Length: 238
Ligand code: PXP
Image 1 (cartoon, helix red, strand yellow):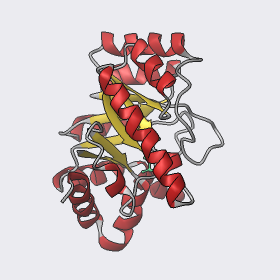
Image 2 (tube, helix red, strand yellow):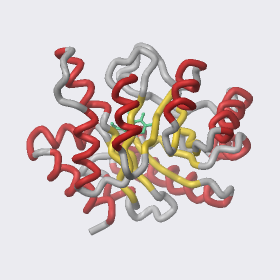
Image 3 (cartoon, helix red, strand yellow):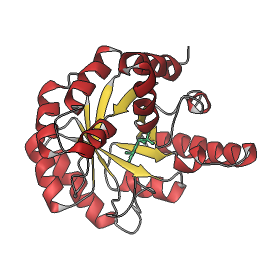
Image 4 (cartoon, helix red, strand yellow):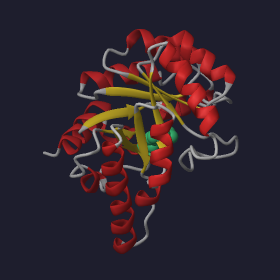
């Protein structure tokens, strides 16, 4: 399994003072240096953390893989075409949410999603759809022509009992296996941390995890190189 680091919250901290530090671009370089196999950033409509300058510089500096998380809006689709990330991950976006709260409703938005997927493919950009672990959503994702799904692990991460966690884990496992039968690549993300990642790593159908908040939080105490190296070790399963 590969670790991709979501660097949004370095920008969140920078925006707390509106200055230049900490620079998420520097953070991305340190993450790559210490074993991250991809960098993820979310360019939100309200630019609350990552901004256009960050994305431009990240495109220049990231040597592994740049995954742009984004809502399907005309403005951000145009930016994606101009920036050419390696992968885009389409997510739903609500103005007032603290973080992405659920997967895309691909069934309801099938036409819009399929159109956006085609637009990215015309520009040689791979597409991932962030979906809840529900077979019908996975099937709808495959029908749009997307290359990959990212399974929303938020409900698993927020489970309040071992039983609930086991139930959520089983949903994730089944959705990942189903996606593979449809020849979709499978990523996972949201709420994965140093304590729960070992439940995810045995799921062989998941190729990649996208981890942000817990890694940035740990970096504050142990430093970013150690936080990345520790998570790389856990994600690789040793
Ligand atoms: N994947 C997606 C689609 C997300 O929206 C986020 C949060 O930005 C993550 C992964 C990372 O989640 P976390 O910050 O909880 O690790």
